[in-house]
Length: 90
Image 1: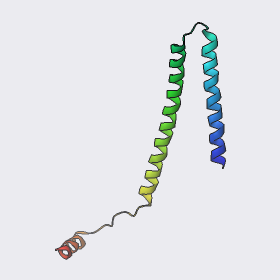
Image 2: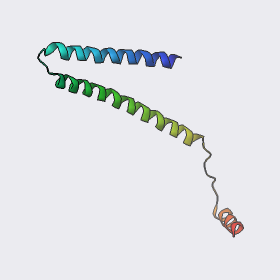
Image 3: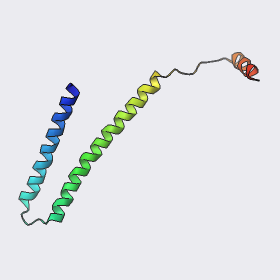
Image 4: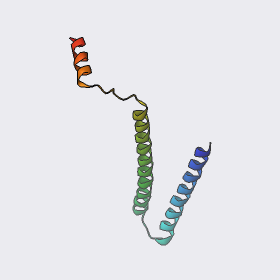
């Protein structure tokens, strides 16, 4: 539950920052055309999406590492044991 509340507060602050940036862009240039405003909003959104993708990728990699550590490792054999295993397979 703590993780979800932290995530929600992070998203709220991120949205507030996006709207504040959009308001600043709108207020500083009253003669700005819609195309430039849309381009600015696309750039802001792209950064947010890339951040989410990076976090998702990091989460997947950490899960893969955890799964790799949980898997049993191969056993160590000396040369005689290895030769014996090879003879049994024939």
